[in-house]
Image 1 (spheres, rainbow, N blue to C red):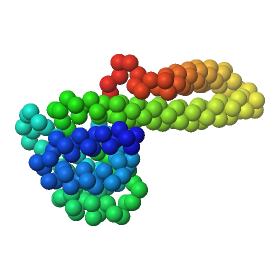
Image 2: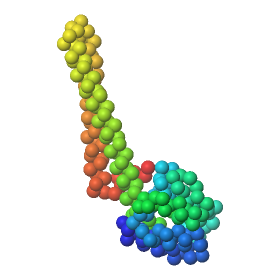
Image 3: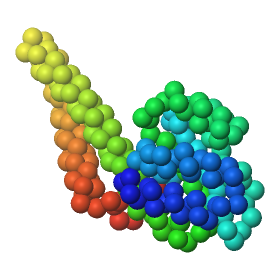
Image 4: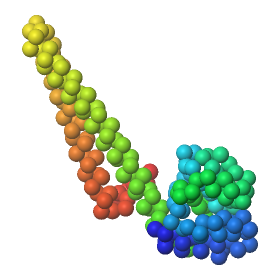
Length: 197
């Protein structure tokens, strides 16, 4: 990861020689390339983040560099670097906008890994949510069975409820199996075929 990051940073430093803002921040990032995480989009919850616009052939009305500390914009790289001292060791999330084909190729693998990890996290979150729903449904199912043993008059109504609950639990069990299969597939490939979300 650190080596791949270093390749990207070195390349940006070379093609952005005329931009002192980019040169300043690249120098800072090169001190510890393993802290850099290239991402598709920046999120407010990131402690340290920045966006760079590296375009060679087209004019894009974007600032060449924008820095953020906990989602709050910081006016320039030197102020950002000074503020970042309070977050030693924290990853630095970097979003690159570019039309440079070499840079796009260098970023491709890193971004695929990042997106695949995000997809895995979504699967794990959904699995945890379904497990909790299943546990609640099972508790309710057992409670209804207990009521049936005591209240014989309501048995026809409760039998219908139990049948519905069994169907629901079966559906959740099937969803868990599907989610687990998707999760296992992401272990062998960086991103599932046909997914671009």
